[in-house]
Image 1 (cartoon, rainbow, N blue to C red):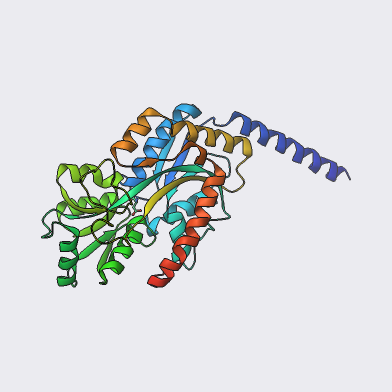
Image 2: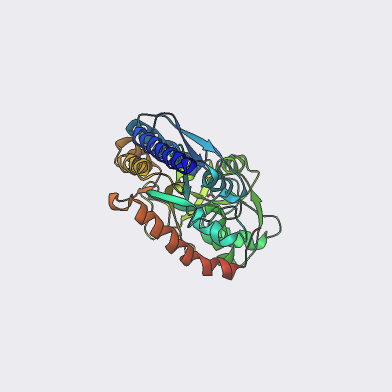
Length: 324
Ligand code: ASP
C-alpha cells in the first residue's frame, strides 16, 4: 500500500516535471537531422529553415547530416531519439518513396513520428557534365541509347529524389543505366562538375547556380510550368518526356510522443520561417516554391505523406526496384 502511494506520488511528480520542461522548451540547442550529405539540396533547405527557426525559438538549431542508405539513416536516428523536441528531422519525398522501396526499415514512416509541417517544393532538373555531347533532351536520349554500356547516372542512393527521378528517366528512355550512389547529391554534383559521372537528376536547389554558371549542362525541368529561377530551361513535357514529372516536397518531423506544448512551439517556428524574407528570397533564387501557410501544419504533412506513398507505390512496383 505504502509502495503504491509512493509510486503514484513519484509518477505525479515526474509528470509535473515533464510538463514544466515542455513549457520551458527549448533550453538548449536543437539538432535538425538531414538524411543527406552537407552541401546538397536538402542540407541547403534545412540550414535556411533552421536558421530562421532558431531566431524564433531563441536557441541554436544545429544541422546534423546523418547521410547514407538512400536517406533512411536520418529518420532511423530521429525515430529512436528522445521525444523531447531536441532532435527533429527535415526530409523530403524520400520519406514516402523509401517506405515503398525498402522491404525492411528500422522505423515506420507513418507511425513513428509526430508531424510538424510542410516546407516547400523543389523541382528536379535533368543535368549532365558540361563536356557531354548532347545539347537538348532528344540528343541526350540518343546519346544514352548509343552509349548505354558506359553512361553513368549519379544518385543519392535507393529512395532519394535523384533515384526516383533517375528511375523515371531510365524508364522513359527504355534503357537501364549504371548508377553511381553517393551520400547526397552535394558530393555527386562535385563529380558531375569534375566530369567523373555523366548524368544526374537533382533539385533546382543544387543545380540552379551551376546551370547559370555554365559548369554543367541542363536539359529539362520536371515541372508542369517552367521554373521561375531558370526561365530558359524547357520542361520535360515541352521536350517530349512528359512522364518524367515530379516535385520534391519537404517536411519537418519529431519523434513519436513529443509533448504537445513542444510541438506547438516547433510548428509556430516553422510557420514563421516560411514567412521569413531571407528564406523566401533564397527559395525564390533557387527555384523552390515555398509552401502556402495553410499547409505548414501537422495535418497537411500527414496527408501529404500518406497520399505520396499511395501515389508512388504502383509506379515503383511497376519498375520492380526494391532494396533491403
Ligand atoms: N536531395 C538529396 C540531397 O540533398 C539527394 C536526393 O534526394 O537525391 O543530397
